[in-house]
Image (cartoon, rainbow, N blue to C red; front, side, top):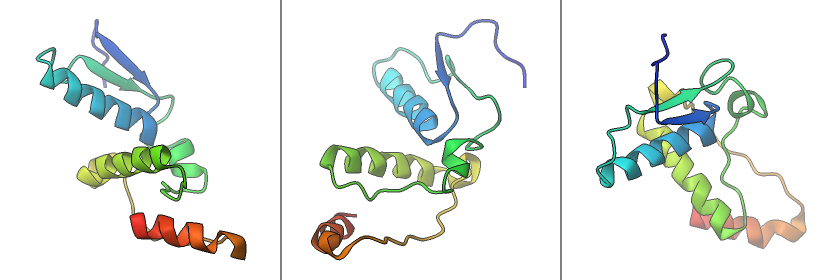
Length: 113
């Protein structure tokens, strides 16, 4: 792949957060009539989801109790699922292990997901 001589925006990191940031940024720029996304480049030292997104536990999780984090993770997963093949998203299931004292919290998180 060749790099363009000039771009307006560079996102560093092609993990879930970098790709989600680039995608949402492109959507917002297009809505404002500023560009179609072609002026955004995502760079990574390796390849898509080769770092923390694909290796560290190999998961994208949405088990956060804080509402803002849950919303952010839901949006990230929505982006990945929108083009799972090209974004290398592989939903393999979910398992939660937690102490008894967290049972009600975990049930609430599960219900909201």
